[in-house]
Length: 265
Image (tube, rainbow, N blue to C red):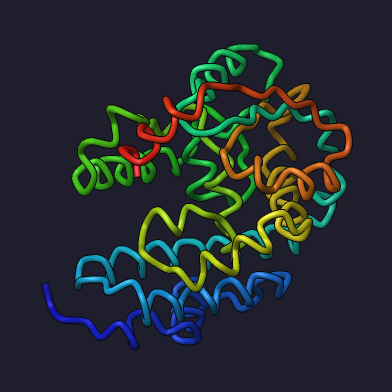
């Protein structure tokens, strides 16, 4: 593996240019992402102390997110009516990690009337899916899962990734670059301090809703069933954008939860 300079490989403007070149597109959407994006990239360079593999993995992740943003805007430019897709009475499962949220999410997703996020939709949300059963992004996502499990082989024992199974909203919200998933990938204290003050900002949920509208446009259920631990700290922002949301909160004693969360991280 060749050596990479983090200053080059994780350069904020350089990655924007590379994503635009890869896709042939230029509109990244609302500029609200730029502040957390720039803070994240600077924190990765200054504090994360990534090795070469870490730099490459973070670069791939960020390029995927930027390319997705470009394709999302292209989709709405082509079909502006997607912005009128209603997201009514979404059901949110809230709780700390390891409190049974995944089990409950999987159970409620068995309702044939429900709509839930497939991993492949979170990884590659645009363009709007024509079908949830036959999409070329499924195969691409299976390759992602295989590669991810090679890097983190023990993760499957705690949270098994399934390209076509129910997944957390983080795969959509991370496109805002304002999500604590980045804190699980690297030591980025400056970014963490910023995020702690902004995680509930409604602007992230507006972009998240935009993605749900795109995904629902041709593949709609009676209601969305969603879950992600970040909704606990972002609850005020979520409810400002989805005032009719229904909330189910799981609970487990803190002395039981915290050691398991540490193990997961």
